[in-house]
Image 1 (cartoon, helix red, strand yellow):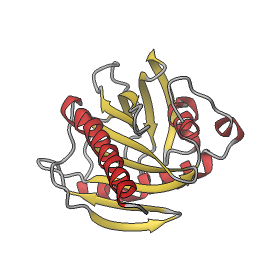
Image 2 (cartoon, one colour):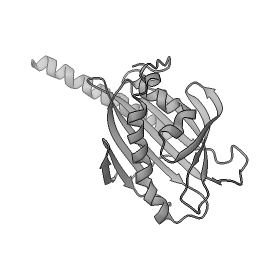
Image 3 (spheres, rainbow, N blue to C red):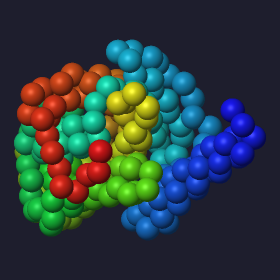
Length: 231
C-alpha cells in the first residue's frame, strides 16, 4: 500500500474509533445507572460460540456479566429479535412471560418480564425501560435498559426485581457479520443468597446469547426491515 493510502486508512480507523467512543461515552453519562468503572473482567466460560465474563460491582453482592459473540446477520435482523418483546420467552433463558407495557416510540418502551426462579423461591418480575439508538456514522447500535421497579403495582405472585440495568452493543463487521455484546447487572430482590444468584449470572446470559444465535435465523427476522436502522 502506498504511504498516502496508508495514512488515509489510519485516519479513517481513528475517526471510526472516535465515533464509537463518543456514542458510548454519551450513553455512560446519560443513563440512569452507569456500569462499574472497574474494567477487570474475569473470564468465566466459552460455549456455543459465545464467551462469558463477570466482575464485581461496588456496593453490591451480585456480579455484573458480559457475554460476547459474533453472528452472520444484518443489523436489522438482530435488532428485530431484540425488539420483539412477546417472543422473548422463545430465546431469553428462563423467561416465561414478556409483555409490552407501554410503547413510547418504535425504539423506546416499558416492558415487563417474568423469570423462573429455582424452587422454592418466587419467580422474579422485572419492569424495565428500554431505548435503542444508532450512530449513523459507525452504524453501531446501542440498546439500554434500566429498571422501573415502581412503575406497576406489586403482584403478590412474584418477587419484584429491585434493580436491573443492561446494555446491548451491536457492531457491524466485515463480510456481513455483527459483533454482539450483552452487559448487565441485576439485583433480583427478596431473600436470596448472593451465592445462589451468582450461579445464574453466567448461565442465564450465556444461554440467552446461544439461543439468540438460533432465533435470528427464523424467516421473519431474516426478512426484517426496520426504518430506524441503517444496515
